[in-house]
Image 1 (cartoon, helix red, strand yellow):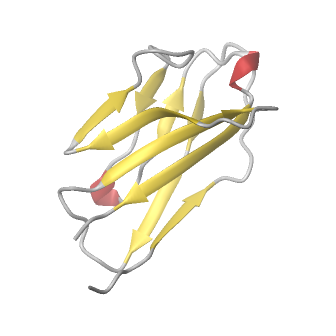
Image 2 (cartoon, rainbow, N blue to C red):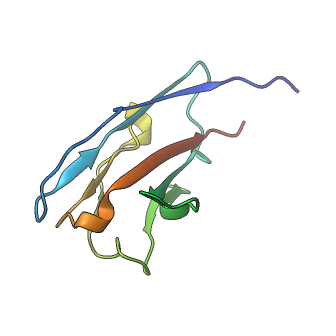
Length: 109
């Protein structure tokens, strides 16, 4: 069956200060209708690390924030898939939050 791409857009760099909050923007575009089965996953790779971990997941209309790890209780869902937005907010920034964040969007038929 044919496959259509989803174009995902994020900021190249985001800066914040320790103790503040930062919004990680993730917008996406698809020529297809946004399905009820859309999923959005955020991954984090700490600076100097080779491993990436999943820190947030949106599926079946609900946000699921990882309940373990350094981001638990510091994340907030700020997105709206109907508006093609998968953004999150990280509160109380820590020096260990420095790294690469990746937004992954899937829109199954």
